[in-house]
Amino acid sequence: MKNKRTLAHILALFTSVVWGTTFVSTRILITNGLSPHGIMFVRFIIGYIMLCILSKGRIKVKSLKEEFLFALAGLCGMTLYQLFENVALSYTQASNVSVLISIAPLITGILASRFSGEKLTNSFLLGFIISISGIFIIGLNDSFVLKISPKGDLLAILGAVVWGFYSIITKALGSRGYNIISVTRRIFFYGMTITALVMPALGFDVTLSYFTTPKFLFNLMYLGLIASAICFVTWNYAIKILGATKSSVYIYLNPLITMLFSVVFLSEHITTYMVIGTVLIVTGLLISEMRDKRAKKLS
Image (tube, rainbow, N blue to C red; front, side, top):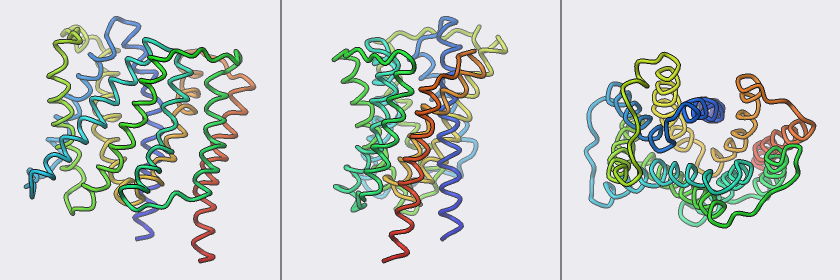
């Protein structure tokens, strides 16, 4: 069991690192004319095909209630989360979205304590306060100005809420003995199907040229194969072993990873605020993990 928990922590860290880099790939595609919802839909299709190749057979769902949970996970974790986050960026600053989406661990912890029986510890809350402070500082960068945009900010908060629901639903599905890749495949099926239903209203702007241009193809495949198919499997495994609350703290690293890769690939500059924010984020994450372990030893 200890080896499984260690692996789960490693996979949660890996997932957070990869998801933190997706900003770079997405930005490259958007600046070359592809819409956020177009990227989202292509990611889902590529990810689903990959999961069909990796999974062994189909899940025999035990009840309509369980089938509903799979559909709800696809709706929350894929369609709604991606739409809320992408549309929020159209109405408010990226710094606002970065900070507000990062309250997902707190929302996940609250929902998990309410529906899954996971304890919301003092160390988790202290770690959240410290890490969110770091994320806030990175989001502000060197301007130290946040503009309130009610519509965009509300959408970002809703994104954090639906991700919290996705986490506890996935935890419930993971405890039923199903293969984690097959679980993720079924969630992807529903997420892809629901997204397909709303695409006519959003507009589908993907053309074959994106798959024949090496730069575009690489970024689409990275987002679909690694960031979607592989990372949703690794994240769902982490939730299954560690629980929704403990896994969620790794989300704190997403803005940090995005910042580092933006410096390398988008020629952005490291500032004093970035350094301070980095220290606070890592400190908060370590407190959430280390103090809980210490408490277990004392009990």
